Image (cartoon, rainbow, N blue to C red; front, side, top):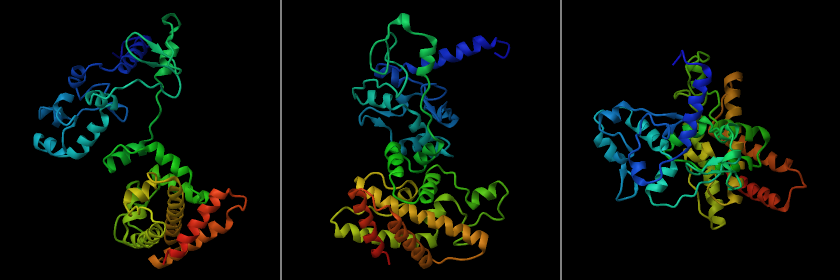
Length: 351
């Protein structure tokens, strides 16, 4: 292939991408799709290949599809089928995420109409080409430029793939990003929360891996490795802070006769996104501010050789939240003024 002219290599590449848009129509075609080395089944924009699955007789979608439940077969089935169980959870999770939703819907007998992307054109079937207004484009007007434009898919941030695997589900990222942007926290607090979700915080463990830290240990507890989830959630010093914060939120829920959302790692890392709009804003404003205080105090410990107890962190967070409420512009809408009043109530409930 190296001796092929560049023009033909580009032509083959473009044609392969063009063919990859077209999906199998009937169930048998889908069930007989090869799981590995298949351009239609990709993880992180690349076809997958897990030798252990192939050696265990798992080759096609039919091998992992349960026709009775109309769903992918259970984890127990895969565990018992695999001859070599090393790394099976990670590989099985990636395989499930790689199977297109369109395939699953058709196997479940869900009627699927093709939806156009946000921009450009898309292929509805082998013979029809539609624009984003769902109007047929006359064949004589179809150009290579239009076809290439239709192949420009949205870029999925690597962090979404990481957290999907971490929490073993396809997370509602549109909701997560929208609610992250609606927080009323300070600019710095919102920035740190954005960096946490994007997994771009240089924790001590990351610095240790690149030779920029002596031991990679947490600056608060001094014993565990300072990973992202440890620093902002599971460190015993930090966990006490969150317990006090969520005790206040629980009391607030009781007073307002609303459902209490319990403390969890996923909630701390990704923020509140699956409740009513008002509670999402209030909770994320508080959590983002607390995460900013955690990061700020962590750096004070590292660079100024000071120390913080859980009680001191809680007091610091309360002062920061109170200062935030006081500094809010008086021209806030009545809706946001109400949010500020609710946050102030929760601050008073933190002990």
